[in-house]
Image (cartoon, rainbow, N blue to C red; front, side):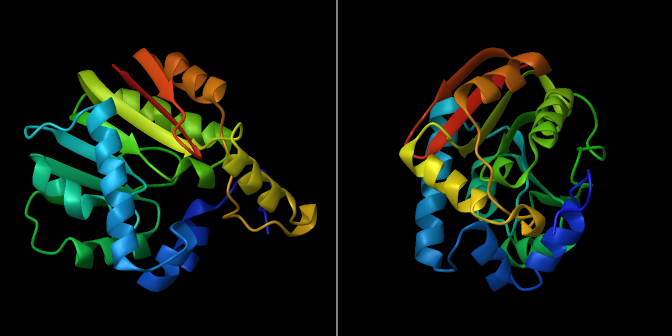
Length: 222
């Protein structure tokens, strides 16, 4: 049930991630490790061709979940910081990333990156997260990414693209719930103009977008 004018992301996602299996089902839709690795490989390749991955990067993920991407990205960079609203998610990530010394996991409020200092990281990315956020909370994270990036830092985000056949099916599935009984974790789509506007309004330069498959992907530099 929606909670008035504010979505309680922390309570919602802690509830949905009481076990790693439940967390994966509600984020990815499956628990198969081979499929998770395949999806992660696609994400890392997308990061390579958009914002780049550098061995001296301190890179931060907004909404790291169980550490699906971090497990494979951390060995490629100097430091990987995983932030998530759900302490349960971070607990699963801690187990998945055990033994990787350059990893830091950090709980956040669900609306900002307040624990992270200004101008402190080289790159920020946010993948398969915007679909779980209200649009103003998406923009809040875009602004926060700009704040914490060093000058010249890079930002990447994605969401299901409303203007695609697959994205429209996502929209229709969520729209099918009665207005008085919509789960908080319903998927929400974005458009190219929305992503472009958010990045530019936050101050990013060299803003670009692409629309591979179901996704709209945006990136820019500080």
